[in-house]
Length: 185
Image (cartoon, rainbow, N blue to C red; front, side):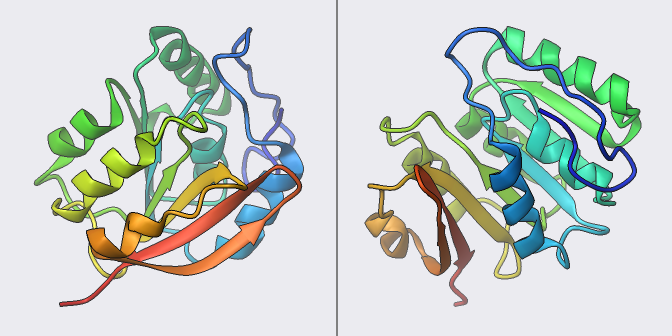
């Protein structure tokens, strides 16, 4: 696993041992960032279920202004901190060791994020709770791009009921990225 492009290009990132984390494959990460490349520079990036931090670090490498990493695993947060130190992105990042719903609540009042990346463990519907909390939070608005990495079988049919619209779906062999925005009032 490595940083694909930007100021930290080709730098290797540490990963977690075991099956608790499934890092996004480099080719999928590259496709994702090709899709969002114009939104990343200067953005505030929120990486939920961050795992190793590779997605948020990729955003920082591509000139995101700031990234916040959230994971409830102590081991994952330690790896994220090591990767941030190695890539020299500690000054414009924050790591929160908590569950993602609590993190969204704690970030309230601290400014809006431009991009929110949600990569929960598949098949546990954790993204629904996070989207429900985001729908009532001031950390996003109609301009915030929300990306959910999900199993191919997931449709996020409930997203419309939470006030979101699906603007794009990019499918891969085993998973997909679902792009959402908050509907305007």
